Every structure is written in C-alpha cells, then in structure tokens.
Length: 279
Length: 73
Image (tube, rainbow over all chains, first blue to last red):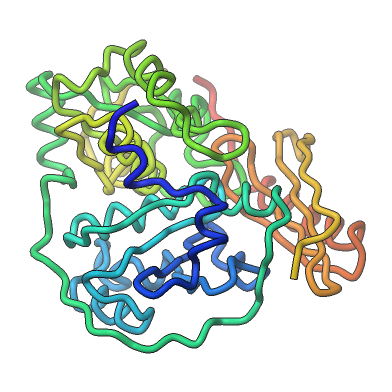
C-alpha cells in the first residue's frame, strides 16, 4: 500500500477522537443538503454544495473570494487540517476536496466511509451548529492541472493519448437514461464520449462506504487499461461523482496526471454536433 | 445523541431499485431514499414513527421516479 493513503484518509474512530481538536475542522458535505440538519458529527460544520461550493451565477467552481469567506467563517485558516465527510460514500466530500486542492489547501482529508459508516456504527450525532471563531483564509492560485475544460477533452478525443473514464452508471453510459433515477434530466442526448471507459464511481468503494484497497483499485482500473502511465480525464454528469474517482486515482493509486472534467455530460451531452457513442 | 433504530434496506419502487435508510434522532424519525445506482439521495421525510417517515419519503420518491424516462438503446 502506498504511503499516500494514510495522509488523505482518516477513519471514523480518529474523527470521534479528534473532531474538536485545535487545528482540525470537520466539515460535512452531502448530496442531500438537508442531511446535516438531521444530525452530524459533533463539532462539524456543514457546507451546501449547490450554494457554497460553486459560482451561483456563472457555471463554475467556487470563486476564490467566496471560498475564502466560506473557509473563514468555518474557522479554517491555511494551516487547518480539514476533514471532509458526507453521504453517499463521500460523493460531495470528494467534490469539496477537489476544489480545496485546486485552491492549494495542503491538509485536506476524507473520513473513510463517510456519513454511512458513522451512522452504521451508531456514533454520536448532534443537531447543534458549533460555535466557530472566524479565521482568515487566503486562497492560492488555482491549480488547473487538476481540472479539464471542454477543449482539452476534445483534444483528448482527437489525440487518443489521454484515457477518458466515464464514472456514471451503466444505464447512463449507454444512454438508456439521461440522469440518475429520481433526479432531473439535464442533457439533450444520452450516451458517452467515444472511446471512454465505463468504470462506475461506486466501484471505488466497499459496501460499508470505505474506499477499496490499493490492490483492489489497481485491479479495477488496470482491467480497463488505466494504469497511470498516460493522462486520465474523469467525467460524470456534473463533475461530482468524477471528483471521487479523481481522488481515488490521484491520491489512493498515485496516478500523476489525472483531471476532473466538471463540465461532464451536462456539457458534452448538450453540445450541438458533439460526437456521441451509444451504447 | 446517538441514532436509534437504524435500518437500511433495498427494494423496488416505481420500477427502480432504491435504498431506504431510516433512523431516529431526538424523537424524530428521519428517512431518506436513494437510487441504488449511483446512490444519490433524492427524497426524504420525517415522521413520529418509522412507518410514517418511510411512507412519506416513498410517496415523494415515487413521484420523482415517475419523471425519469427510459430510452431504447
């Protein structure tokens, strides 16, 4: 197992022991933005992915100034160890992790197993928002080596030197459905980017919500010819599932060149004339 | 507070497999429903009893699932 693993993952017991330590801030980020109010890790603050972790006017990740304000009011400075967790196997916790890395925050970790494991272990929950002393935060220059934009994906398709990984469900990959069941449809065409490999994001995780072992992940990606010796771009529907796959490939497998295409299928599947492969 | 009466089970709803998760916290039952693939929570409800919370959540979930279209591939 590589040395990278312990530094980015903490287990639920570690969080139970250290959640309120000085210099540590636990943050819950969920798909369902109401989950935090239904009980959270005592001492954790909650972030709303669709209002606080994005630009709410232009479609974009959170702007630097807005991130600085969010982290500041969350009591986070540039030296704070941020521990993220959330529902659905840390789906949106990984989305927050990706953005924090883009802005250069050094010490970010994910609670392995997320909210699911915490609940299953019947650990303490609180419905109180913690009293937080505001801090000052300075975002770094965005590291765009972690993020793919449309022209780069088009170039990858043409050049065939970069592996494309579609992390959506098989039914989305084939075009049978346009979005996950129960969620709004947000694209005009179904299918996938030609040549993309289908490796659904959930395969990164065990049944208890924890990440699979290094060997299991290596086998999962290796079976599709993804070994880290070529650039990789991961995508999904809006870029959040693929941020978890990005996390697994970059931080658990140690692939050197992995990008998250957050435009994802809601961009590609709406483009006039973009090539689409089905099934 | 500790969550009580935690349960998690999979079943079919409106032609889709869903995961239903329920627990009690501070006298209130919280129920959330997620699609199994990819696992996104898309309906939730509270109630005084487990049955009430789950019934309300399933009613919402059925409505949302009914809006998902399938295409021939």
